[in-house]
Length: 58
Image (cartoon, rainbow, N blue to C red; front, side):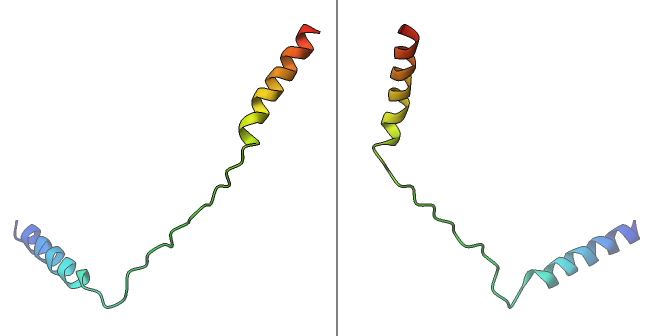
C-alpha cells in the first residue's frame, strides 16, 4: 500500500512539474474556403432533366 501511495505522489508531483510552460502553444491556422456563387450551377440540372425527358418522349 505504501508503494501505491508513493507512486501516486510521484504522479501528482510530475504532473504539476510539467503543467507550466514557457513556450507559446502551437495553434493550427484557420482555413477559409471561398465559394463562388453562380446562377449557372442551379440551372444545369433542370436543363439536363428537361433534355432527358425530351429525348425519351421523342
